Length: 208
View 1: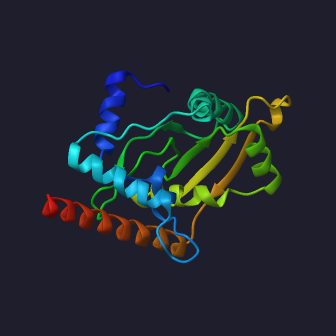
View 2: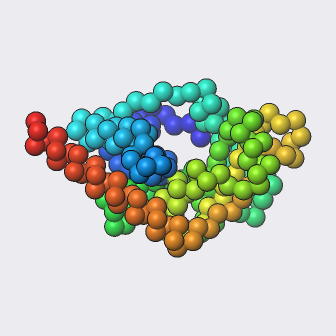
């Protein structure tokens, strides 16, 4: 569902300077020798800039991202048509109950204890996921962060590609219920990243 300009501004303001689930994978990204990756360093600098300025750092919206935004609602509609027994509704920003500046905005909520994560990737990526038959590892940190912040128990991962000619094969679904160890690992990385962000803030203020 497309947001109005006012809704988008409020959404960005609520997330400004915070580590959110959609960036969790970057926050956990290190090189083979244990050094922070370029993605992780960039994320830290972006969030530091947001904290210091109060403005969200703008990001380039690629064609693939535009496609995903355009077809998210359609993907959910297809899911609901196929599984009408589920109560699917819009979600909201969840703040982690004990970790400051850690939040998540799931795509949808399903029934009383589930979430729905919707991806509309390129056709080649969609085919890779279907042939592999499992949730891509790179998206699991995001879903773990969503569960940690929302208190929900599981995530329904759905991928949708409207370009597939056979309508019955346009939707790929898997249920994700992470282990306690998986959740703890993501939470530990979030705490570590946010501590580094706080330290970088203090260093900047002291240097200035």
